Image 1 (cartoon, rainbow, N blue to C red):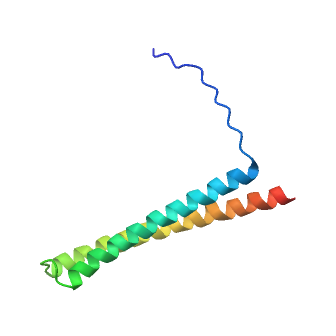
Image 2 (cartoon, one colour; image 1 turned 90 degrees about the vertical axis):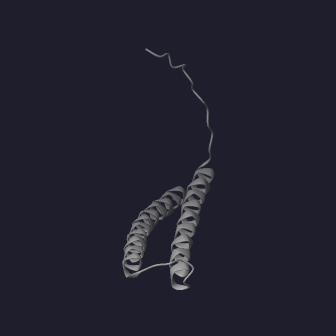
Amino acid sequence: MPNIPNINPTINLKNEDIVNLLLASIALEEFSLAAILNSEAEKIQQLLEGRCQANLQDMIALNKSVNKMLKDIIKKEILLEFKFENILDLIELQND
């Protein structure tokens, strides 16, 4: 059996620091989603500008792919909204 050392790190965060870190995590996830959306838009733009050879089947496949990605992004946005609402509740609790 491997031996895992007993590590007890001490982390001291104030409530304000925790809220700021949580908000920063949402901002980074939003930034990532924006990059994904931009990438999907570039795929469509290349197809529409004729920079790649595509037939009708390719266009339908791209449309399905982009549609699925947009649905996944919307799901993630909903989760981020829930996370943000939880942070607002945490801030409200701190102010009471």
